[in-house]
Length: 320
Length: 288
Image (cartoon, rainbow over all chains, first blue to last red; front, top):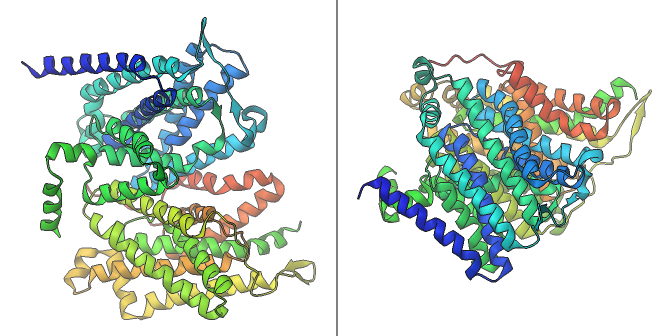
């Protein structure tokens, strides 16, 4: 059997499993966790495009996500816009802001870009806190019972049928982006900007595109998060959240296709298995991410692919 | 308020920004790594002071020294863990590693000291004294004086000692200096230790001014701003620190207090977009 057909079988199998899950699982909380996995997968997949494949460090993902969440929540609560308009709008608006934030990337190298995006994240959070007339300040916005037509999205089971299909479509899109001309251009810009430029690949165009895509993904993810949690406040979109996204990506495997998805599963599910971890979640994850980035930059996916972890350790021992 | 008064008021904060920025620049110049965990080293300095002086009642001077040594040790370990192994890896990895190391310190502090906010009474009175129309506190003078002393120390060290010359050689060209018998790795450790010392001094000095809490480490963003404005040169960063504090205070008075927080970010973005090499920086031309 050719690889293409096996891949299709896997995808169809995964779809069937994902479809059956909500009918098998009765616990609402489990569905909530599954929704979170989907949302984190969406957001980190976008981050992977800009950070993993284009090589532009972005510490502004939580800011993007916050913009998406606020746009969704405010347009539903204040303007009464239906969700199927609000959610794409959040994505497109965040993509626009992604383009603006991508501009520094055109001139700046690694460290400077990291700082610029970090500053943007803090600035976005400050705007959320201080622009009280629109964002309602630190008090946040509550979202209660959102409807799609006649259906009320009032349970985690129902939200699942919104979150997972969107996640599936966006991840499918992401795989295709990476495998298309666009993806190859992004990788070319990452590997050698000068070589790419001289081959006619405009680095400016592709860098901004990458930021726009990551903005779009984070915006949609943030919008969905607002629906799932039902409450939006500035403190959820601080630097910590951006660190989370980085950690998810590093743990899962940067610049690998399934990396962000594996990372999201690991990130959301492990604290549920070990309850003592909930309190020290950030500490544990940043520690794990630190260990991964030093010893196994390939992340979980790299480990799975290379077979035994011993192999990686041996290589490091040889190097040292 | 008088503009002269405003500028004088920002000297104390300016020295803190300069110290934090200088710590960043020392590491950056020697190792080409930007330490995103610098703010957490600064926080550690303040927490060490709280522990040694406030809790254990050790005399101030001794507690000061112990905090500085403790933080320097931490910086040394951080270099070994998060920086040394990643020298040959892509820059991105070292950014993420120092960042994560900072976060680990951040949450370890929360784990050890709790989320409690500490207040330390100032060692020198903070009652304002007026000279003519201008008001200042002895504490501000103390902060500026100690900062000036440490900056002078760094300058003398870099200018006149053998290790300082080695440091400057490494910051210019690693390969050539290692061929001349300079131990590059030793200089790397040295730069981190020096940066840890500066961060601790800043933390200890600022401890009575600010509330001591885990989040205080985000002052490192101000240090970044100082570094960027000064183009990551040592004198430039010091000027950048004072400039940032002055602009912040002026904005705080004439625009709005809420906006004051944004000044550092806006300055970072403005300088990066208009003149990424900074005010005193040297234009670096990349070879293909």
